[in-house]
Image (cartoon, rainbow, N blue to C red; front, side, top):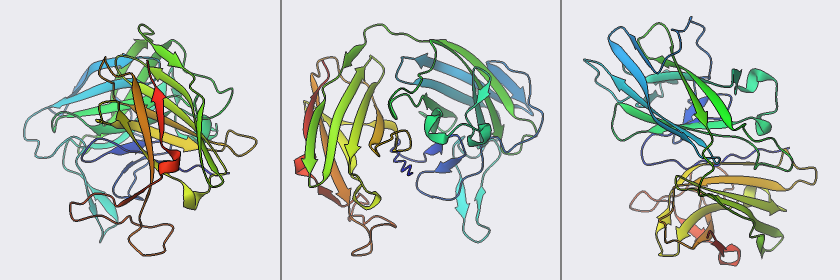
Length: 317
């Protein structure tokens, strides 16, 4: 069975925590393992200070689509950002400055989301760590696996999130904890069941859940192959690109090989009534290749081949 994970984060460094580790989105294979640190952690709190560096929890929410937690670092003589890192090809290792995030372990209601927990990765919650508004902030987003197949459990209405965050140059991990209650107010739940076909590949927009803080979209693909896996962009009905906050997909939870793709989008303007899904195939740098680095244009952007047959307009209101 296959699990092809596509993640698009905000501009700059994006770290993906998919139960097993976190990695720079632009530097595959450079991932330190989640939970690799074995040092005794400091007691749980909303703010922890060690060796003159404080780490605290900022604004957080749980809207039923995902959990979002903001992290804030403070201290003196910090020369690099909290999510900043550099890959050293010679030593094949990450180079971090003091105070940068080295490792994160995530526990939900006391249970780790690490792959080593024993549960299949495709049924486990996932997480994504992205840069925040400045060099001292980061945003952690968490999602359950309930839209990655039929009959998968969602997170409970109340979730206790425990983060064990290791910073470079600090001996003990910072243990931060927050208890979050799902806020189901003003949700728009739709099942458009719109399908489009391109050759053997069929894409169905099965479910949409819209809140004031995010939009969740479930796509189900039939007869998809790794070499023909499209990527997706989403635009609102004003033609504005809607940012993808996190996404992942798998066929591991489907008996008939259907590929479930779970996409989390930024919140829409209140007046938006529909979104347009625009699939595309990225061109590879090497002509004729089906894997490897993508081809970029003169502005450093992906060279894309639009798949017009799979485009669809999806109501969200």
